[in-house]
Length: 295
Image (cartoon, rainbow, N blue to C red; front, top):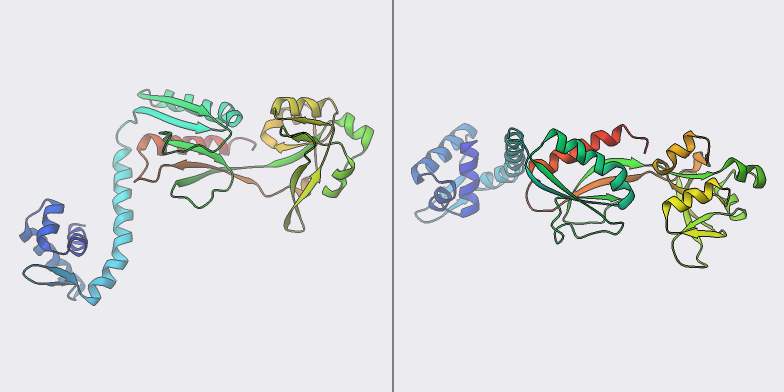
């Protein structure tokens, strides 16, 4: 590793003297490392002059192959070393309100029990927040991420389902295809009166939207579920939110064969460097917990 490190430093700084300053070694030690590396590969990698050093053609090709691998090894060593120390300090997390209270808060409780030197700050927001500007260590996003400088880790996937109360289905019949929904009362999400909703489905391998309408609209998840249970119409949303109602028989799942592709749950981190141990370890714990949930 010292030989590779010296080679990379010489190429990137342009001289053995500058490389020695970067590495905290003597110029002679850097030169010995270069000679040993060139001897082991059997070709000249660096052309030296009294003032500058630059890569030969073979050295440039070697640099392009070695640099990414060296960076990966260095990060792996830092990660392994960080696991020896117990995580500590404040862990700031942002998550959607209901998902945060249902899954993230219990995971944080487990994390603090495991690492008592951790303090947690969980902020709920259903709108995308500025991870860097807000000073967050980690944010939970339930969607595909646009191109971004943020780092991300996939934690799980959410199933989106159509559901209704048995009483509603007895009175109005059961839809058999997504297009049948246009003849049903559907529970709408949002605040704009008169606006119809668009529900996503997968039909013959392609995603399509179906416009629905109904007599009841709400921006409150609990109210939406209550309306469905009372037979006001057909609902649409994440399975985890209605799993208990389904288990009790209060709601039935419809159109399962047309369910839309599952939505990713992702943890995003600030872009600078490798996330600290407290952040990575919490993301791992949350991912493990979500594997055991019916999402």
